[in-house]
Length: 163
Image (tube, rainbow, N blue to C red; front, side, top):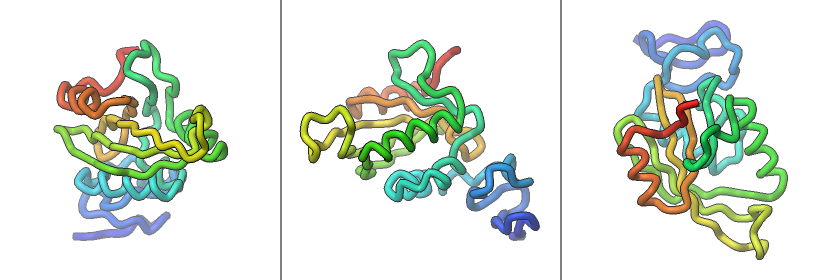
């Protein structure tokens, strides 16, 4: 049986939301999201540059950083969104080239243009991100330069940091 949240109108079935609520303070924000839809929502959020949609996919204490870091660069949803906003404001754009599911993790392939460190304005950087998932939300984002490294990380189950 489908139902709508009285506060925001997001659609759910039983105890699981079918779509994320864009209002991060809504009464339904802690209700799990059905995981099969996460990959398509991640793709749409990355490609649209819609930080509100991306934020709705992030767990409150999600972390983002590089695998060699002992402590990730970003420690929560807001820090991740701030980092992406800075990159977007600097002209960086990402096109999703690939999304694969490995257990409870996603490997997302990105072609990034307009990166502030690029030597040429139209230079394309290929990057891979492993998104750790729990209850339909992204709990960690770990960036890699090579797909093989990202897939190995996703398959190992180690997608975050031990801090």
